[in-house]
Image 1 (cartoon, helix red, strand yellow):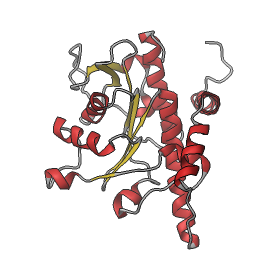
Image 2: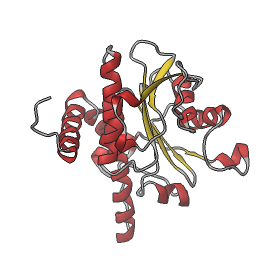
Image 3: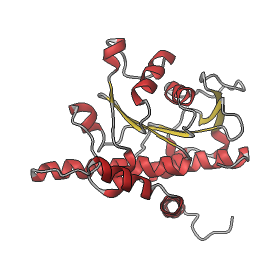
Image 4: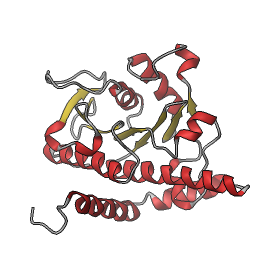
Length: 245
């Protein structure tokens, strides 16, 4: 991860736009990164659609999800999702919360999300569920209180993806690039699992295959290859591909 704060802001903004360009994020959802030099802080945009986020929109928060520098820009209500995961998991360097249409059927039905192809193995061997009703009863389904974020972080545990009943998913990564890889391919895996169910049978990866394929695909080479591909797709979508910077 870059030690340059300006570069980190640029990368966080780019990751938001990139994952939106791949159809996982829409008007809602957010991507964050742990501060490159202060592990007790993280970087997150003020509240706006991910596809619109630029480097100058990125603010600094403590892991208690308090703004480091006061601003009149409104922060995301669900920033505690990120802060509480960073607090609980020192190994996590980036987090994405989203409501992808392929993930939501699992959140609604309670059907277990399983890796059904090699790139989907990056979701991890287990994808736990978290249900706000269990601890908090009837809510708006917005995870806006520190205790709600902490509960979600406990449900995530040592895993990399957690499904939120009737809401969406939260994904963690050891780098921003790994996070993008896991977020995008987990969503695509979910779509394939649903399609396979429509054919009447699903044959998921077993535990050993999930570990082997997950570790293989999260090596620096495959992750960098995918990041470059999605980055160029973003540049083309934004009309900057091939132009001098």
